[in-house]
Image 1 (cartoon, helix red, strand yellow):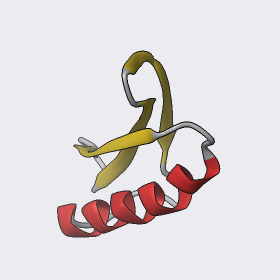
Image 2: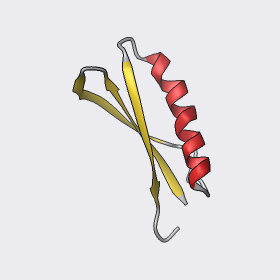
Image 3: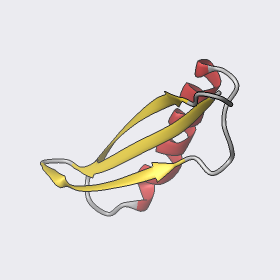
Length: 64
């Protein structure tokens, strides 16, 4: 199982970042997690007034 995490930062200001965690639950495969990361980025970036950049990762959850 994988958890999707996304970091959104103002371009040129690496200390201006926000961390998002997927609230829809764990994904069964890394491919599903990646697809969710793309979906999250496409939903969040337009909400910010400044130019932003999103990075996401799929974190494997042990024992799940």
